[in-house]
Length: 153
Image 1 (cartoon, rainbow, N blue to C red):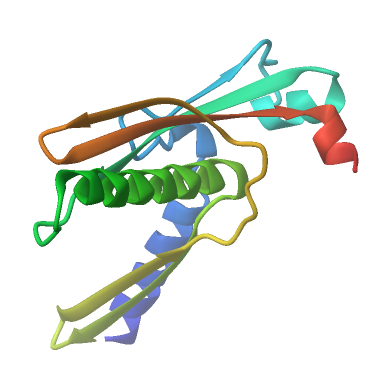
Image 2 (image 1 turned 180 degrees about the horizontal axis):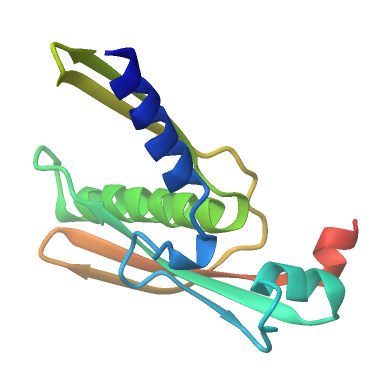
């Protein structure tokens, strides 16, 4: 039993040590662009070393609740949810995501597996580029421009 737990722990450590370039964004439309990216350093390091700008663009989604009193209220609530989702996506890109996991194994079988994710960041100067509302789904495209001057403060 302990041997299996040690192997699982080593396997999890190996996954955590994987190269960050191999991890793809969660949201299909979430993109990060940089004017130049060196082969050795990441785009964030490129911004910190040079006076370049990096644009992070995400699309947040929000669904209108069913129990609204008017279409205007449904639109407003869906847009608010979409904006909050877009802020979360930007925070994930800039600051990263904390992932906590716990498995309960009994008789060599997984009985319970729990994964919690959290993000803690402050997002400033994010701009809403476009808002689409169709069939109860609101999509908000938001972008933020990061530059050396912001990190030097």
